[in-house]
Length: 129
Image 1 (cartoon, rainbow, N blue to C red):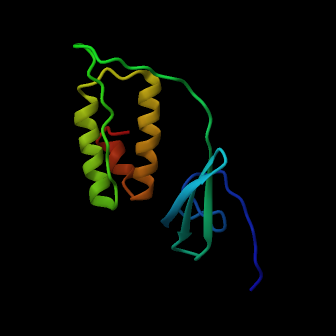
Image 2 (cartoon, one colour):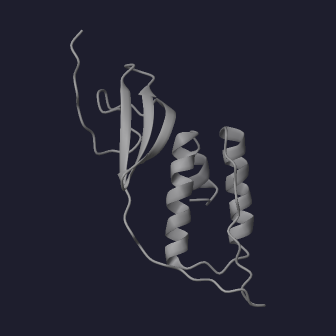
Image 3 (tube, rainbow, N blue to C red):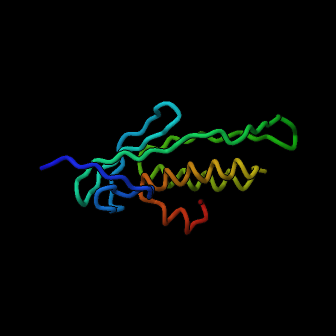
């Protein structure tokens, strides 16, 4: 069997057969790029999805009576904890005065979590992303 290399510009899609039936693996950072490894459950190909990091903005927060902003910390280890995180985020976010930049940052983060654990449709239906 010959080694082949193909490229795709669609997130969460196998570059070889274009299936979205994937199982996520490790992730990490190289220089200013973040990667997610996954294997295709249809054709067995090993894929690495690359994301470029770029500076967007600096958001400052002060401790005042009107602004007690504290970013929640979540530990996501499986689908159930990812779902719990989405619910906790909704409750937390409803009590915050988030900037557009913060909303974009959270939406991107939650979208990656939803993709990783197969919750994209559910998160969209529930208004989490």
